[in-house]
Amino acid sequence: MNEERKGLIEKITNSDIWKSIFRHGYEKTGRRYTLQVLQNVWLHLHPPRISRHALNFRFTWCMGGITFLMFLVTAVTGVLLMFYYRPVAEYAFRDVQALEFDIPFGMLLRNMHRWAAHGMVISVMLHMFRVFLTGSYKKPREFNWAVGVILLLITFFLSFTGYLLPWDQLALWAVTVGTNMASATPVLGNEGPFTPTDIITQSNDVRFALLGGTIVGPSTLLRFYILHCIAVPLVASVLMALHFWRVRKDGGISGPL
Amino acid sequence: MDNFLLLIEKPDNVPILAMLFLIPFFIWLAYRQARQTDRTGVPSDAALNDKVYVWPYLCRNEFVCAIIIMLILAVWSIMIDAPLEEMSNPAKTPNPSKAPWYFLALQEMLVYFDPWIAGVVLPGLIIVGLIAIPYIDINPKGKGYYTIKERPFALAVFSFGFIVLWIVLMIVGTFLRGPGWNLFLPWEYWDPHKLVPLTNVNLSEFIGIQDAMTANFFGFAVVAGYFALGPIFYFWKSKSNKFLQELGLVRYVIVSFLFLCMMALPIKMILRLALNIKYVWVSPWFNI
Image 1 (cartoon, rainbow over the protein chains, first blue to last red):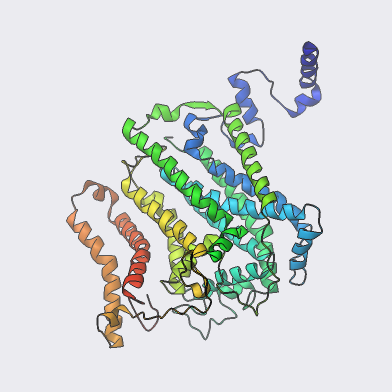
Image 2 (image 1 turned 180 degrees about the vertical axis):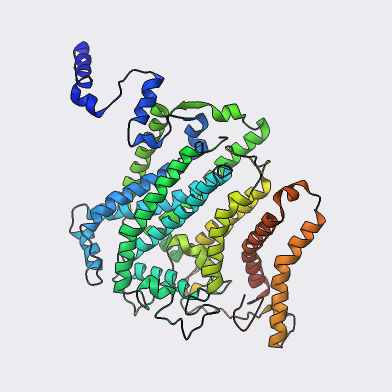
């Protein structure tokens, strides 16, 4: 029986179709382990070999990986949520209510999206803390730390733009409080110091540009929706690719090059 | 106490509750490893360069970690529902109005500084300062392992900024700030009519300067002195310090400026809470 099964597996893995997809064999050699990583588009972000201490959970806390996982979860659940949600002031709140009460697993979908986003904020902060504590930003990884700081900001901004979308009281006022700060920008904000208030008014300062109005209104909802679903995730993806690639090019997550 | 229990039950505050445990846990974890390194000596380059295959060793770790995290996330999502309050109403302002929890440390700064500093300048400096870290921290030691002995200053500054000025202020903003952004201890009732007399005075008034022009110059002198005297004195005193020479003048100026900007927050907090000081520098254009 066992022999039969082994024969069958061998037959499958030796077939032309299987070999056209997976270009490596299954022998337990270093050559195969290397090929397995190099010939897989998803795994080849990794180098074939890494330092032993990078495997240690106590050392890495796994936080960078968790951040990426949370990003993937929010991307998948976010796309599914987009099927049910319209970024229009008249519909937005009703659509979220429909998600909660009418759509099968809609509540679970929304919960996963929100908690994964919160989880991402926590894990990205802890990731930065770990990278600092282990001195992993030092030469030659200075630039990648800078990319990481931008990604931290992008994570906050992604979470912040998403906060408005349920269009409930919590969303409206949290975003109102947050965006009010923009009007205090020196020179460019209507209420900031050194602002020529006859030129920079409430209806053309930086806060207006962010909100598309003088208060958080329907146009803000649309702006934040597009930023949240398209613009910022695109930038985040590009910078993440850069971040991961640099981790590899700079000689692994930490330690001497 | 009921207020506090309500706050804790709020679904959006779960992450902060989690951080109450996560942050001390990870500090303890890092501290233990740092002490071990400091006692047994720094790992050799050979040890740090000891390589293993990514497949299967790293991929297995990633897989296990992803499964555990997805399990936690699934349980969290099934147990606790995302909040949804009543439909947005621009005519009905809740009191207190709070930003999302990860911005509450910034909102907390508004108590002590005007919006243009607390909301624009200081956040900008946090970003610039974080990006500048690798370029101003020229200590080549402590790369790739936990240690305290080899970089005490860098660790102390960053940990103070991250733990006290970011995480703790976030927790204060979430759990201890009630109506009118007044401070309420956990067992206190959130009284929306609580009156806190604002008897704050400016530093110039505090020492008896009444004239606006004199006060302006006095404030300028205090702020300029804060940023100049300390660094100049320290530089002059430890000119021959080898580390300072390696750092160079430009880096030294940047480090001391960023450090003093960071320390301005706790200093202003102490001035406000202990001496009821409102502004240090009152000028016709802005107040600090």
